[in-house]
Length: 236
Image 1 (cartoon, rainbow, N blue to C red):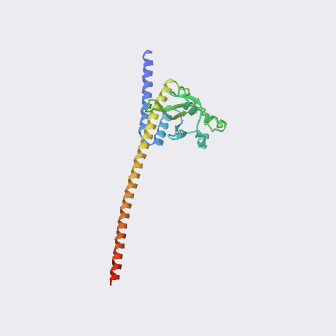
Image 2: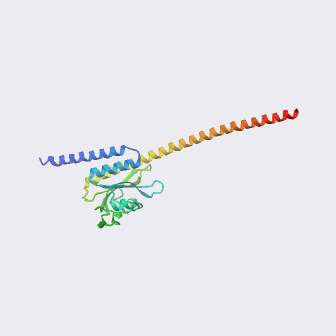
Image 3: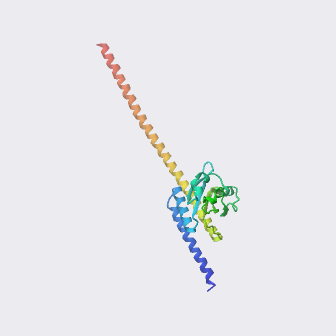
């Protein structure tokens, strides 16, 4: 009996993980709108892992600066003062500098944003630590393109075992692909919209040019007719 218990527990764990990954995948595939898919993913991760709070920080594609892309159940101090979520923090700097366990693994860190709040006033809602999950995709040159960071936390922090960290890492990989897909979709949509605006501008330009040419022709014809009539009057 005991020989089968570890195998049974492993199968049960595997089934649990696959169920979570399927639910997260459905949330990510529900939309190509970046804010919507991030909100859906955060809600699902918080629900399934029992980590009530989460937020996603992404690097701007042009400036490279971080910005808050989505949030779930932030503590009062961060919710009431959203400017505290702007800019760089310890986990983002560690990720950028390749110091977050090789910048390829989940890291559990003491949150530098939460440290600046007043725990005694309930501003942190009991939060101190969070798991930081790097969001990356493979770039065209074979390297990794860093997109940002998924952070998840709960007021009663529990130790995350290796299985939990592997699960979060897989979710981070899925979320990174979804973010890149949503951004590519947004760029394609913008390109299509720009092309359509240019097409309409050309049509308007051509239509106005044709109408203007017709008006000039009519004015020239009218001018010629007036000159002809004036000469006829002079002959009389």
